Image 1: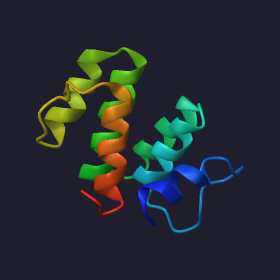
Image 2 (image 1 turned 90 degrees about the vertical axis):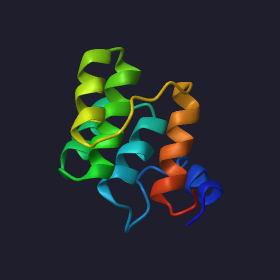
Image 3 (image 1 turned 90 degrees about the horizontal axis):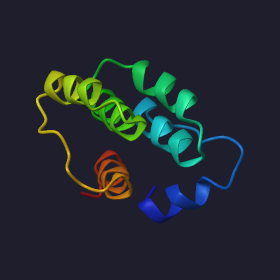
Length: 97
């Protein structure tokens, strides 16, 4: 799946089958369901999940919690606009960096 197909899938009621938990989190975030996105990001304690978790807390406005998750996965806190960070994460998780 590429970024365009991923974006187009957001119009559907459920995420496409086979997406990682981190991609599901970004999908639910794009649908406007922060809580469901947060649940998905927490389901896997891997680097991808932690990066999305950091993004979600940054979006929520909880910068200190976001910085904790960036540190936990060894990433520098993002200074991108939230939409740009979402796209960067989606591209990376889809293998399109």
